[in-house]
Image (tube, rainbow, N blue to C red):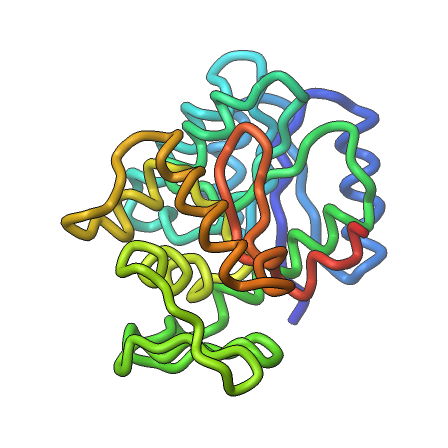
Length: 234
C-alpha cells in the first residue's frame, strides 16, 4: 500500500511542486492551505508523514505542530517542516516541539524526496539499544566498552566527546538542536552553553579525522550525523 502524505502550505506553486514530485514517487498526497484546514485533514487522513510550512494563515506551523504532538492519536506522525531562510528560530522551536526534519525554501525536489524517505525509514527502524555497537564504514563505536575505533586504531575521546558522538550516531540524519544535545548527553561534565557545545564538536571532529565530516553542522539549528540518504544533496 502506498504511503500517505499531507502537505500544509498556503503557496500554490509550492504545494503543486511538492504534490507532483511526491506523487511521481508513488506517495498518496493530500493538501491543505491553512493551519486549521491542515489539522482537520491530518485528523481525517492520519497520514504516514506531514510536510508543514511554518508561515501559514490562521494558526501557524508551530501551533499546528504543537497541537498534533499533544494529541496521543497523532503525535507519532513524523513532521518535515518547510521554512524560508531567516526563520531559523522557528525551525529550532519546531524541532524542540517534536518535528523530525526541515527543508529550507527554495529547495530541490530531489532533496525533499530524500528527506521524506529518510524520515519514513527512521520511523520503520527499531530504536537502537543504548548498548548496541554502531558502525559507519571503518568507524566503530562500542558503548559497552566505551571504545571508538577507526581502522582498528583506538581513538581517545573525553567522556563528553564519546557521549556526544554516540548520541548523534544512534539516529543518523536526525537534526538535533544544541539544547537537545545537552539534554540527550547531559553528563556531569557536559557543557551547557551553545558555544561550548560547538567547541566540543570541533574537538571531536579533529580526533575523528576524515570521519569528523560525518558530524554535519545544520546552520542556525544544530548538528546531525550524516545519513547516507542525504548524499543526493551533494
